[in-house]
Image 1 (cartoon, one colour):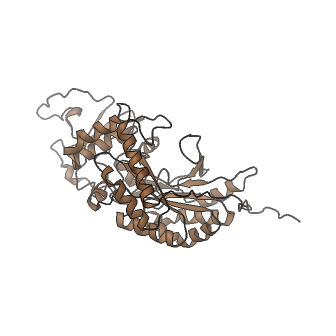
Image 2 (tube, one colour):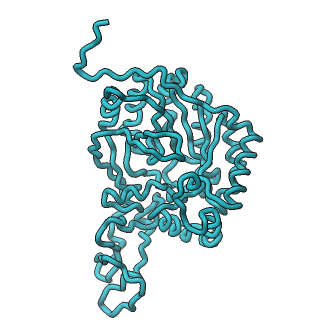
Image 3 (cartoon, helix red, strand yellow):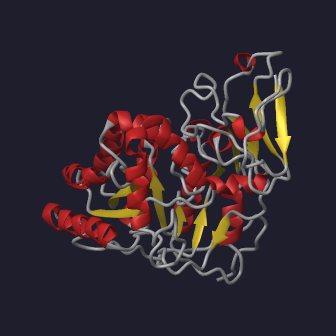
Length: 384
């Protein structure tokens, strides 16, 4: 086995000569199916900040079959702060927490994939197999909440990578964060695709009694086979609906996110998902149109060609119709919903479906009235 490296891969293929490796452009970048079993991405291309692009290929001396499969590894993220701030005008929060970097769920469309390039890793298979955790997140959070001048507002968790992905079962960082937020009386909004959220119903129910929490589960499809291919290590659709049912029964405000909506792939399920969510006791619903920033576009294209080649052209034609003729438009105000007749129709169908099934009839507003800054170790208590 050898590895080919090139700073700028040639766009033209050069016929290989006997005894020499093929030109970079001729090499199939897809990783063998057995090596990536249970993963979402088809390839593991180098990140955009790397000086060289590397591709494994068989040069005839050693078979690629000898390479080991991708296994999940977990490193330590030594961040000094855990609350991330943003000033985006089209999302409903200005601060968030991500207990983990990378996500083992392996959703091929995940817009967070390009962030792995900041670590010198691939947004492809590296993103879902080379993970990083923040074991000191609860302690860092307590320190930040107790800082002089801190003003409480809803913290969003799960907006980048899933806080309840499989490694949370062992490390329980998310539970530690919830314990800190409960003690401090701090509001939080959670987004996940995992049924593991049911583990923390005890904490979430107590917080809900004080209007401190709401939980959203993304239900992308009700088709088990599509979910397995597109979100290989996330909970099955049935498990997500069961999680919504149990959370709702415990008095926790819940939302079903039909996200992302992919034209010609799962857009036909909008009404069915809303119906199923309403029967699970959900009070709210939302949707987001498929987003394909940076490397996500190529990863999604590879996946679509491998799994639904007959729909490839149609899907991308519709995507471009909703993105001003481009594969992606990052313009604030439209990046979540798209533009044009197709985007309008999807939005209208969603609105009619919510009206039909009684969703979004009232908006849950969390409170900050219970917030009390945690006391730092060694802090002198007030005399009065």
